[in-house]
Image (cartoon, helix red, strand yellow):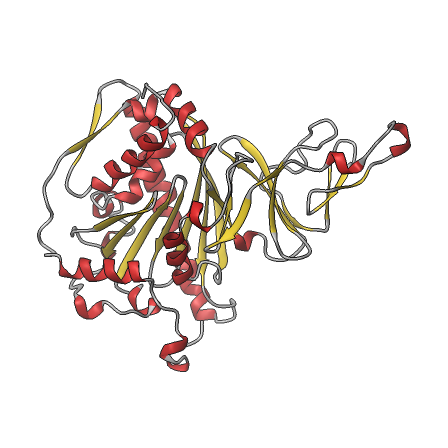
Length: 396
């Protein structure tokens, strides 16, 4: 990363207006005063197969959702196979550099073109079954023994395209072909925040996949409350935080939570320059419904959750960093940070979600109780309910 002293103030990336204002508000809060309040979330929110089906249909199936980092398609000719809420999708970056999304099914007899997680740089994708071949715009370009098909028109056999857009350093897709994916449907303020963070300019330092035996919302919940941090993460992250007020804002359908990353945070720590602000404030985003973005002074954690069933979730985690990888001291810091976050997420947050799922399945609780440091969880579930009930759903 270029040293700050080399960069003029006008050239340095600036925080968004929302990030700056949230930090100012946070600095004005009494660090020793956390408002007491109580709210609840029904245990059925994590257990009900009927609710899970509604979430898949009315949220994941209807909204533009972020499905990948743009850096996972690093150059023209790249493609990536992923599953989104149980649906197989292949992302491509064509010769012009545009990102495209298609259902991952050969137009011949429906075979999956690429296995989940497959990522390559090529100018075409071939079906492993009968070798029908497509370019990265989804057009059928090759059929072995085409003369054996009568009245055959290749143009009628393109891959099934999905609306797709690259914005804020992420790839956004709608699983509904009739739902547009644009800045308005994604959320302009969220895109602005992610551009300020520099997600599109960062590189993927390391990535890891997890399969968690818990409802997807139990995983998201952990990133919307600070109550657990110095307790669950006593051996990992606790030394960086204290119990303190947090600022939680809804930006469109998304959530932005801001918290001071150390003791003594005050107005003097609030800078409009992003690389200065990130030293004092941690921003945790839920890019609704399925993506978690957490900033830190040195890196950004990016996590994609894909619900598989009411009690199972697939997670793709990656650490995003600055620089080209040519500064050994910086790379060593990233290595240590990645090991820390892998432990905190994999063996603490995700394990806690699994323990919660097992406990809820006993039927001991009808509702989960949320205190003053956990109100972001309630706000997240409020947004979920808005979309679930928007089409007349009557059960939870």
